[in-house]
Image (tube, one colour):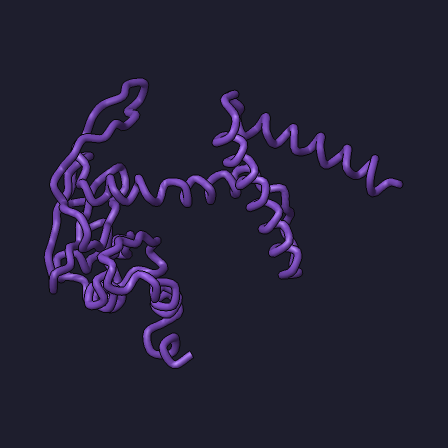
Length: 212
């Protein structure tokens, strides 16, 4: 499409999916593939607020942020340190959490809140910008879905693209089924145990349904 050719795929996808939110002052959260200054400005003009991780090498970022992460790490030496920069009603916040996390947002403040982290065998509280806390709250399910899908993938490498798509769909189905089970059942079950039960069900289906 002309919009995709001009602004890129990420911009056009977010723009097309948010037409029902225009004028509602609704926040949206997205990963770094979709994040850009152009998108954030366009959404803000339509009363849609955005929050997403961003690469430090993205164009149009404030000069102090438009550097390599190694330079930001020298500035944010201690875990929990953060810095924020403003540009055109947009806020760019960088935070040190073992790795540098950078957020482009206009829907939340960068004031510090407390979060718990594991350090060795101890758990400690460190400062965390509120915007990153909000991002983790609303994006955690998506990130967790990706983590479980990769960790318990049942597919195998293949040169055929349709093979990858098939196993991707199967893996998504398995993780979604696990989430539904956790929400609907009071019993506690680890994902590994759930995958074993899935395997038993698939074997039963093969021998009793497909086999006949």
